[in-house]
Image (tube, rainbow, N blue to C red):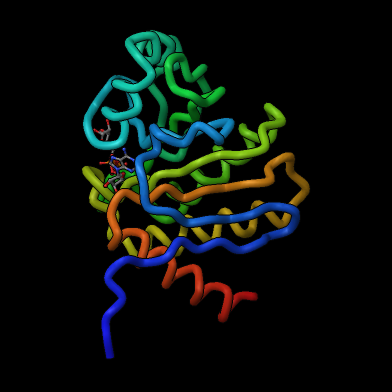
Length: 189
Ligand code: AR6
């Protein structure tokens, strides 16, 4: 059997919203009202996805963060998006795996709070990276389970959101998320 090299993008409907998985760069999602940053506690530039977001937004983003820092694991704060094509950046501090416990509860809080804050601002669409799965070391598959379950549960409640997009950086990240979503749809319809 031939192995599928390029995973196809996935999308499902949950409540009144679409939940979709794509491979890409979260700084290049101009159709989304807000994007989520996998931030550090001080809301400084940092590396990984945070570095990319700060570079694209410009130095005003770090300046805006200074007034709101520090934040704790599981917390999310909102700033303008400055030079990014989006309206808002939601800065989520994920747990450092093996250090901030319980890591799954704290990770779920990042996704839930981000969606709550987006709904408070009546936003219709938001994009997430795979929070904590880079520098913070959260294993990808369990992180994807927490992320996708939390977002599915949230979209079943009344919300302004009509689109939640997971923007996964590598084909492998997309494949794992697609597998986990299919499994959740089977086991927890
Ligand atoms: N678009 C989408 N995803 C990306 C992008 C991008 N442009 N760049 C990287 N990723 P990480 P964390 C993926 O390390 O684990 C920072 O220094 C990446 O491949 O960015 O929450 C902060 O300042 C991985 O799958 O976030 C913090 O100190 C995912 O984004 C710390 O790292 C998250 O990786 C946060 O660590």
